[in-house]
Length: 190
Image (cartoon, rainbow, N blue to C red; front, side, top):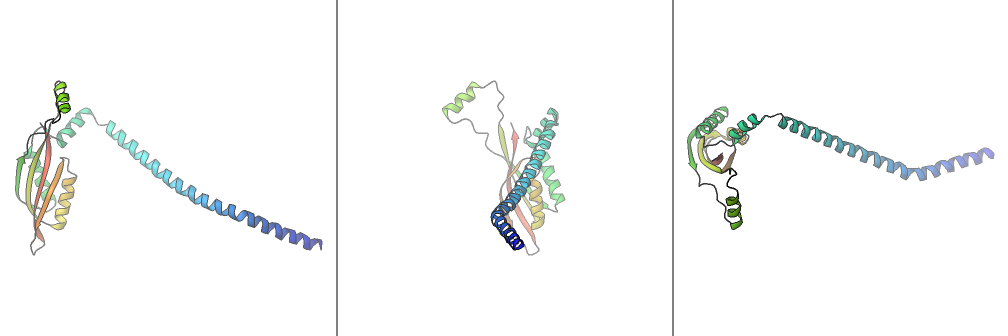
């Protein structure tokens, strides 16, 4: 009888702890998955922080002379159509694009201050060298397959000279080679 009571108490204790422990066990599993998720986010943040520190170190390692050179490449001091033409021809050659025509057109001069407050600020700071950014519009007509055109456009997008594409028009042919007209603009300092 004592053995039966002991077994009964043991089973009752086991069931009681199971009944009480089950919610705690479920909470522990939920917390473990949450901990794993948070650790994943933290590792992502650490890698982002490391990438940021690497970029800052790379930026700080660039000398003033190199920064001036990069600025002159991104935003030259004159229209510099010759270098732009050479760059466009190089991109075309790399991507099997046949250039038909290229035309350049300088746009209207930079916008002057319009409001009274803007005119007042501009007049109050004549000793500061004001950087005027001008636009150089160009239209390029070329022949290429669609895949070659996409590759050309991707290279143009990542080119060191800033280029904004305004419009693109296609005229097709049966051979899969399109005649494409691309209107874009680039910038220069005045």
